[in-house]
Length: 272
Ligand SMILES: Nc1ncnc2c1ncn2[C@@H]1O[C@H](COP(=O)(O)OP(=O)(O)OP(=O)(O)O)[C@@H](O)[C@H]1O
Ligand SMILES: [Mg+2]
Image 1 (spheres, rainbow, N blue to C red):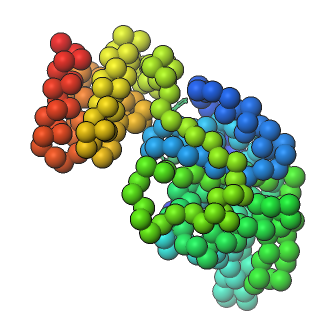
Image 2: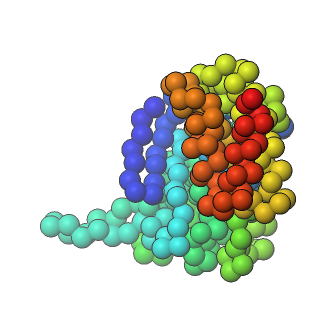
Image 3: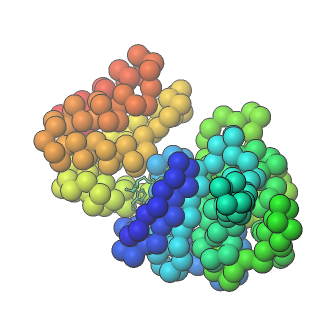
């Protein structure tokens, strides 16, 4: 794998198959979207496997993957490109979106809802039948290369009173809901990613499923697969199960003492 990283952009050519266990027919749907040149929106809570899924699909489809972490300062120029002033004159430098459009890469805009509306609008002509990227500064109308595909992620769980995607943006994507996997699948993932045995992974996933129920009782953040893997990695390196669960699962989720103590009780009840 070759990785070139700047602050908010990563370019990957995936040569090794990323480990990804599907939960449903998401692989087939994504593949059809790629063939039919449809843009994809991945919805789901943090740490549920959205990034891993895109990496896996990029590998499977043999496309480079260009990822941009969106934030509210991200401008259209950050995506499209800009003129740079050098000692010998000015040169045009493609932004990550333009590069993906030219190279036929998969462009993954992570947390797209964080980007400003005027930035998101540049995606519109790319995500309908036109498949073009107008570059105002150079006067170019860039037609997307055949393998180009736009993928965005979106975490609908966060409270976003002011920020949401406009219908005219949302309706340009095929949306897939990626939620936490079933118990058996999640056990397999946690064991694979950390090296712990199946029984330990099973305990961690059962604990997570119990803590996730506290979501209905006021726990704002529920444990993701990512947190379970972190706990499992600590256990694999010799930390006791309880300490690993307290520090890698319980403590990151809340600062509320009653929630913390409810979660610690669940840890003690799960690993007696
Ligand atoms: N279905 C899966 N197959 C394999 N690994 C998975 C799967 N789901 C989650 N994982 C593991 O969980 C970790 C977290 O997943 P990932 O980083 O893809 O989450 P995410 O949905 O992109 O989160 P965020 O919204 O915070 O970016 C991965 O690094 C991987 O180890
Ligand atoms: Mg991610």
